[in-house]
Length: 635
Image 1: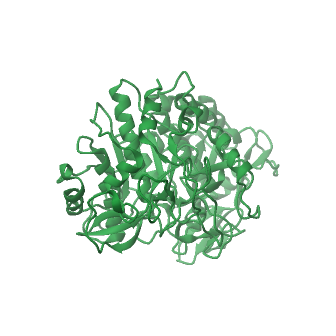
Image 2: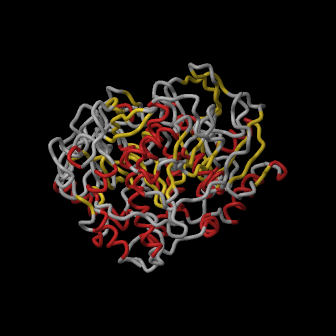
Image 3: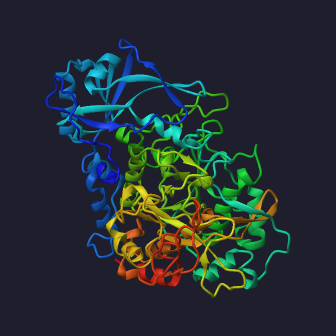
């Protein structure tokens, strides 16, 4: 796990005052500043009870990238030999040595064995403690912090562990992690609010369609339809739904589709799908709510399903993962819990300040148990939502990123839209030197999960005015700008070094080094792109023009689903984690290179699209015939 945080100093290794522990104490985690909206109120009462949770280091987690490359790189002898869920659990469960080391240290520090509990997953150790004891164990000072909303929270500014214990512990709760909730926009929204209207992460609309519906390809520069996309990317194949092929699209309540809108869209653009619905998998009480309607509630889901289902056709069932009830909502972690039961407790489990907690006791809340391993995996999963990296702590993002790697090991392709604000964050926010985000900030604000090296980030293109589908697209520069740039959290993966170094050598951005991550050593995104402008979408009984990387991701997911279909029909594996493959020389020219356009933000023109990979459109847009041939040539 710590290898994922090579650009973030979480464990400084500074000696602290040594107590009666087995070895000198070292700093494990430290907060850089008190989060916005919070103030220090008072020291915690030493005699008060405090539940300590030690997230045990996962065995072999530092090698997860190596294992993923073995099954994902086209030159590997193990290409396509994906793991089972059991293989993943066995490989990364904490070792007996780790469990015993932490338990022994606690007991030698005066904690009775009956107060030490190892969870059933062996993911963490819980200790019933007093504040005084916790402060001694961790060389910390626990305080109450008050928020301007009236809420209080227990936290410390820093904590320490014995030098010989630190490698066995990823983090401790409670400690410094509550600040993730409080770096998120003026409304102080947690990660579980990703589906709420106004969160700044959904598609954009240019209004209702005022002209007649297009009937051919002559107006694809003004209106994108299913036929326009088929012509742009050479989609001359319809999946036969061979065997276990599957395509999943994720939505977060209250975002929901309307069946009447699907019928209107398919009735006009794909009659064989008229009356069809996605196969819904409810996660933590998720359902296709109809209480609230309008673009802000139906735009995202209608867009994703109309184009995702429309491209793969009626023979391929599309799975809709609907996450969260109407009260709590859900986060990406809640969704991942449902896919992988081990993630529910991985490295201490979810963060209650960020992620929804179930059962939900609120009126109208979902009162069932939290979804842990209840949802089936799909071979391709597309998500059109995202955060800013700075919304979340480095630990939170690293923990989630490792889970995407595990899904890749199991043969799942994970796609995320790269964002709609160019080099700025959601809503046009940019970073300030103190880590806060404002609309007048000057530092580029990368997105997450787009910067996780174990997912495929999808940017946006457009058909320029006056051009046809047979001419090159440009980066999207209408209504939205394709999100892209460099991570402030994650190191550059080996698979993209050659492509990104070529860009930095030949098209180095002419900006001060203090407004973007100019080290040349961090994860760059997006990886690919697809059209994201002028989509005709049926919303609340009328057609609207829709824009965003929210368009690009489900379209790309449909294309990769078609490729999986062909490989499965040929007796081969799914394509799984695609990044090592698409950046390899074997796939040179398999994407349509985009060389025009940029992605403005933060008071700049952003980066430029260029020959080869670029931080606006990635490697380019899919050329389906070439991609299909290249993947069928692999074992």
